Length: 94
Image 1 (cartoon, rainbow, N blue to C red):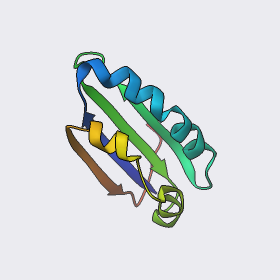
Image 2: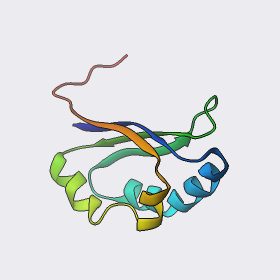
Image 3: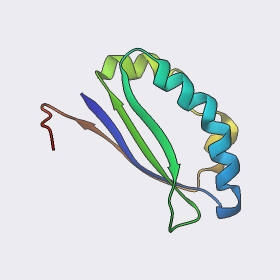
Image 4: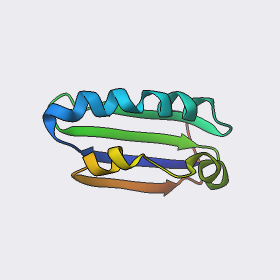
């Protein structure tokens, strides 16, 4: 299993528009083969922060979905990013 997690920073007054522009990508990801979860969500305390969480069955399925990545406008709106890829070897119930 593969987890992509972290955060993006955008201008606080642009965050809602940024997230609205991601809705179609979230829907496409959730429908993609191997996607177990995909979420971009507003931070309740930091008005410019967006949380990123993705869970995939394999790196190959993530790569097949990724394609070209975010649009130029989305990339330009990101002021900073702290997103990491975690390869998980086992999962246990909480």
